[in-house]
Image 1 (cartoon, helix red, strand yellow):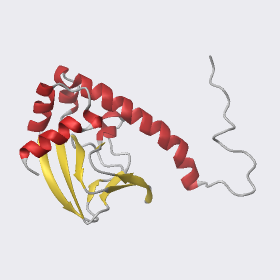
Image 2 (image 1 turned 60 degrees about the vertical axis):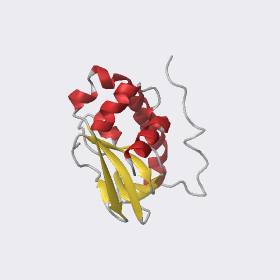
Image 3 (image 1 turned 135 degrees about the vertical axis):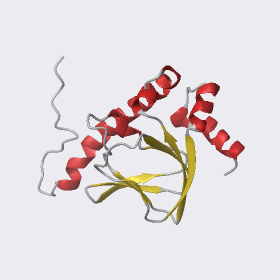
Image 4 (image 1 turned 90 degrees about the vertical axis):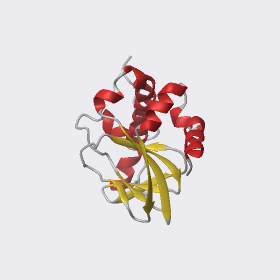
Length: 165
């Protein structure tokens, strides 16, 4: 993609909403455009953080945990940011190119840079997104390793106790 097209994608990306123009410019300076072929693993589950997260420009990616495909990422979404928010700073899932080709912007930010004032809004927003994904995956993952049987009479979605107040 051409520079102006990539810049427009950044402006239009809901995952980057709230960033001012100067922060977007700083982020773009730390980006590298990569064209990847089908099957390429962008991030491997358990790998230590390499100080990158990505924005998918075109194509689609599969998200895998313990060898099981959990879902897909479609155009113009951020991924790989969760590793910045884990205690071990490691990848929580494998992200693999699932389309014939995918184009991504890989952003390189050390944890210190990510915590710096220019990127504080980005860190706060992506941290909230990472938390929501974690909570969503926590509800989904038990079904992958232990799917409910037809003889089950209870549902984890309905048999929750109220949190303490």
